[in-house]
Image (cartoon, rainbow, N blue to C red):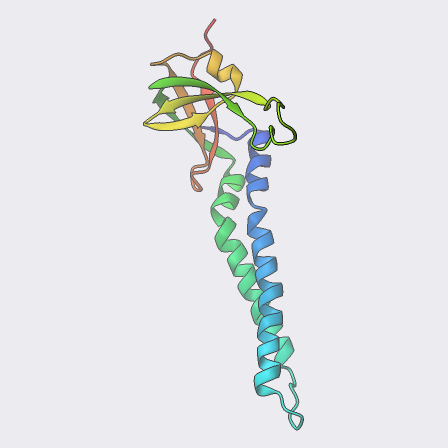
Length: 167
């Protein structure tokens, strides 16, 4: 296993991967706070009692829980971004595969319409199929060695590189 420095494009990809760790806690905080407040108001609030500081306490607890959830979802990605290193694993291509696929629903407008087709290219490594772009597909053969780039802590796959370009 080799280690290399992350490129700016890979850092950007890791930052984009963090988005779900921001969106999900925000919605959990918003929905959870409103639902919890509705339960408190309907169960505990009567016309003779006041809520006092209860909404502030519930909001603060919800905010702290959402920040913790966000950190838990993204902390491995944060470590990879901060360290700016990637791990490169050398693997061997077992097989190449190319097949013609069609876009879902592209032939349903009228009878006789041709469906939009596209070429799907993939390589099989360690009994898993990985979809690759045309450049990698054309420049590799069965038995060639390729690098799989991963974040060392998050194990997020950043991409596939050829070991050496074929001429």
